[in-house]
Length: 204
View 1 (tube, helix red, strand yellow):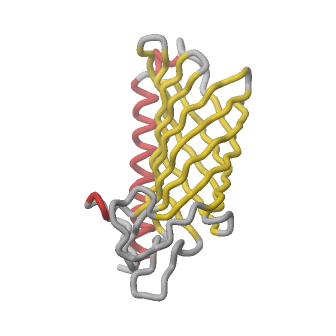
View 2 (cartoon, rainbow, N blue to C red):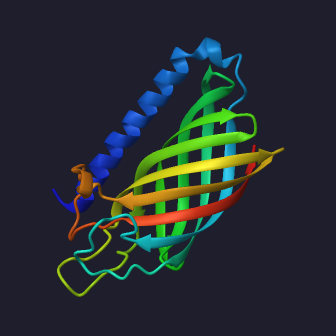
């Protein structure tokens, strides 16, 4: 099976599993949801600083760890699931379009987001799949830097002000090889791309 075939198969399995999880969770807590806040859609613009191999302990490929500007549009649709303490747990899908490595490498991503919302704060964790149009940190050796197909992981803190919010977060893209979870195999090793962001957004 080719790399693109593995990616498409992995994407189909991930999307199917994510939707089954979302539908099952919502159905299971249908009665509780009626007493919870309404579902909400968030659209956010983020700027950040990204670097290849930012969290790796080695740099076998000798890639330059140059910090470069990144930008992205991030959108999610979160459904309240259940309360805990003074807050509410949420789950839903997300999608993003980003420009990495000095805002010249396009990337698209999507997956599932989990959140805990309390008072004006919201803590969010996202996990999904991503695809970039080209490799980042490509070298002339047989090790070609960041692969195009990656997992998309993130942690975000938001603070809401009426319908608007500000945010700060961290995101990581890699193929999971470092932790033995490399189902999106591609040529070359995958040092990972790390990104720290701040953003502003609107809630609908």
